[in-house]
Length: 565
View 1 (cartoon, rainbow, N blue to C red):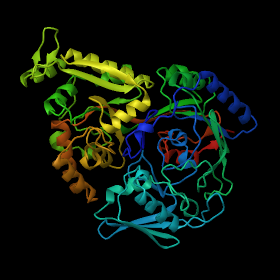
View 2: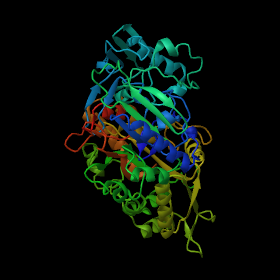
View 3: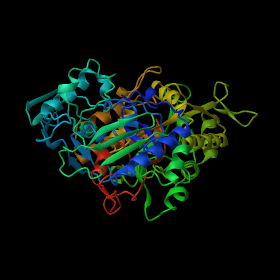
């Protein structure tokens, strides 16, 4: 799953997005109490961090690494306990850190992945980790598909020896390496006895990670150093406090007070309310590694018409949205291909280099009129069948920046003669609508990795979609294209740059001409942090990883931090 500010959207939605948000009704007083309690406990420990990843309190106990809706996952804490085989540096294309796997190699034309697992690693109950645990983890996901939130598809997983695991695939699977890297390993000796791992709470987790659970309450949970962690001398930060807050504003008060060391909470006044209070120790970082889109439901009229989607795209002022709605935290998209530029310039097909996004409500109106829409007496367009052309953009009310974005978008659409309105709903209602396709327009998005494949695959692979009313694990806009599916299959079957560019050219053309999803802005990962208690954060001079609070990448950051002397 992938982070967008403090939004977790995308990631193959095997996620049960309908349960993405926990209860959002905790009182500010309980949140303040949690912060005070943590500060008191931390005062006796010079090696600690106070953390808020997402204002989704109160917390519910449970650390099941397959759950993408529990408190542990939403707060980015899961990989502190359960670890992956490898870690991608999302800031440096091509850099992959060996983790529980020391090395890996493709064989049999990309249909076999051989993984050499690390020796000397122990689970926190003292039992040894081995390749058998790797094979068990993947086979458990195969037996219970609801666990596969990363969309890994394979034929078999075996462990010929204690230090070698082999995954076999029906077709070349080069592009699955990133998805494989996000799978967190679980101990066979414990999970083999779990009757239903999908519903397993896992409130006493046993992992290989750098931390163990010390305490848990609805207001906070605390991790302490795993004294037997396999990376000798790590972690140097002894205690992590994850704090519960009910909303962006309530969390923002704690952040502004300087009592939070690490956060991914949206604050419209972050610069003045946090960074400028102590510029020597308070910092922010934004990473253009993900993409936000406006998703039209292409299974429903009139959004099944490309011309309607084209007009909507031209009716959006992205610069205004980024400036006023997102307060400059993100970057307006410029390419109609959906590629984040200049990050993906090497993948931009020459024939689409001039396909720029523009804001021209007059042209959008003319385009619709040219295709049968007629202007009514109220200044709004009517559909060719004479019915009012009305559009509803649904969004999650607690996400105040998105709701501002939504209002700006509908105002801009109205300039193009589109009778647009906003519907704000609860996070749980929005996530359900998003998954089952019960919407006209909504927000959507996906992380990108070492190339654009994951973004294109998530947005355009019809195999991940579903009929309206059924949960989709991708293609939430219900776009169906044989050309897209064929190009994605071709991209998945090769690691050759020229062959990939050819496949991406087809996909970019579909984005430009059919507009299955409307590019908005990119940014993807964002974090605020302090050097009050820890140093060693990623920086422009040392971009070893993004410092967003998202499993598994935030584990890399924690292990590079040192207590402030």
